[in-house]
Length: 315
Length: 317
Image (cartoon, rainbow over all chains, first blue to last red; front, side, top):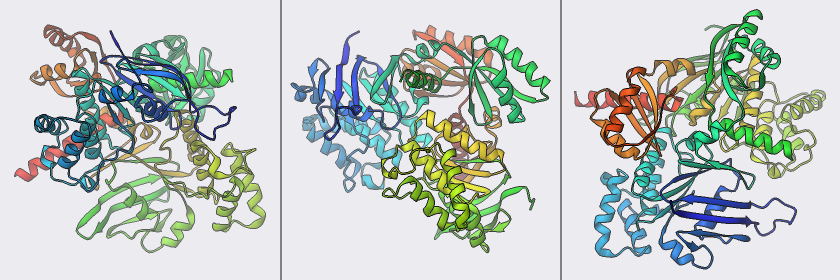
């Protein structure tokens, strides 16, 4: 498979940042294969936006290099831009222009020939299910529709690579779902997509995920692989009283650690079958009433928390 | 009303002109319970919170908070609740200790009690050693914990949280919810709004709001159990083409592509083999099919679909 994006030792320090301060992004090596949906996952302030801005040629790195579609982001930024669609977090749609006018504007700006524009725009309107709303001013669109229009504008010149900065932040669940359905279609057309998100559950929807934390890349891999690589299994328990459950979890043999999610506990264990049997008997002996006891799947959030804890132990 | 209920709302309604922002919602929050109000922007969550805090008068219906009528006893309600808004109303140019001191004065904490209470809160929020730091210099997670400390300076038995963990990383978020659970364990009742479905997993009971109405009310597990069908997560090549193929397949109740993953709802777990065969017969490379529990987002989206279908049917008739 060919490489669509590659960065080497990318570092960005903002003006005013001192030498001893942690850079906004810190020696990032990123490789994205063509045609993949690649997720950049991390909390606010992790460096996702900075990384995407450098890849989008909006900002230069302090050191290191990056290539998109074979072109250097600093020396060949024009060639990169011609092959790239970029949707920043606060997308600059023109609020006083209609859906159609916005699309035409972005088509002109990206040098889409007039002859091709009509067919292209029609297709994108259908793709984003905005055909009925062509004359509506973009300020009067719902949040979800605005995001879809922004996505359509970023795709207007048929880019090979699409960079999306938190497209689903602040979007309601129904629209969020729709956006991920649209991304599936974009991928199926052969476009390489890099999408950043603070939501761990969205990471599971990507081919490959890079977890970014405090400017560093903690890991990269297919979600299922990252989940499998964790040195523990999980069991999920819900029992009353809650205090008893915690005492049992603290003392039980074979339990590496636990975390509370609502009124359930997720216990990391080596052997889920043995652990379930032990927890069950310990809880019963303590007089607790068990309502859930089962093996649970390791999720991206468990991966993230484990990696961050490892990182903190080292520091 | 039962004295154990911190919130008791019946047919609570608020109109703005012709627009019904909150439409006859009824629910109770028992003492010590964490209630999550979920829904997209504009569903009516904030209007509901404002009525319960005594800021906005209901158009019709009733609500009691801690035994006080929100319409007629708004002052009593306001004095007894804690409210943490989305925008964390902290003063950035004040230090951590000064912000806490400000709220202690605002709530009329007696002078001799201010110091021990502040020490306690700083301890709870993990802010010891940062008392003299400017609030504007704190990270998002720390500001959030400070905002919580400020909201509970007067030890309210009822706490309203408006999207409390937006933009906070998962580790800090868990710590935050641990604090909430500790308070609930001491009998504090909590109402939290969110449009993040994963955050709702932390609540004992969930009310899902959509188009001004409460469309579901139950605990997270029961909501998931009540969802019809079995959810399969399909990891395959060409998910969009797979979706096209499965569209005409009668055993499939519903499905949605999520990036490279396809979610397929069928009636029974035994249909997994069938699903795999249909896809393979059509030349789709299948890497993995797994029976997964629905997320609260799955539940919400399915309820919304159901609502919209009913509405369309009603409009046709």
